[in-house]
Every structure is written in C-alpha cells, then in structure tokens.
Image (cartoon, rainbow, N blue to C red; front, side, top):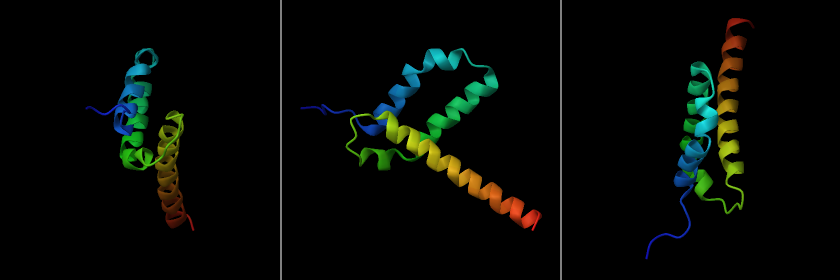
Length: 84
C-alpha cells in the first residue's frame, strides 16, 4: 500500500505548481523572489511534517516567516555593528 497522505515536502511542491500561473505573471525579479519563498518553505519541511494541520498553507507561511526573521536579525546585527 502506498502513502495516502501527501508528505509536507509534496505539499510544498504542489504549492509551487498551484501558484505557477501567478508566478508566470510576475516580473522576472519577482519570480526569483517567489522561488526564494518556496525555497524558504523547503528549508523547514521536516518541521512542517510534524504538524497535523488541516490547512497546510499555514506551516508554509510560518516557514517563510522564520526565514525572514532570521534575515532581519542578521541585518539588525550588521547595522548595529556598523552604526553603534
């Protein structure tokens, strides 16, 4: 018997496909940003797979937010070092 529930990694990949029309309508710089967002979600696929959430979009968005927070922290630290 095969797996009846898709893995979180499969869910992330399906988001990439489901949003493909949206992505194609973006300018190239925005398409790159979109792909980066999907990559952020991929970074936390194992954490997302540990959730039993009926709405898989929520852990995808939370994964993206975690990566954005990490980026903000790095930028804040850089600014504080350069401009004490």
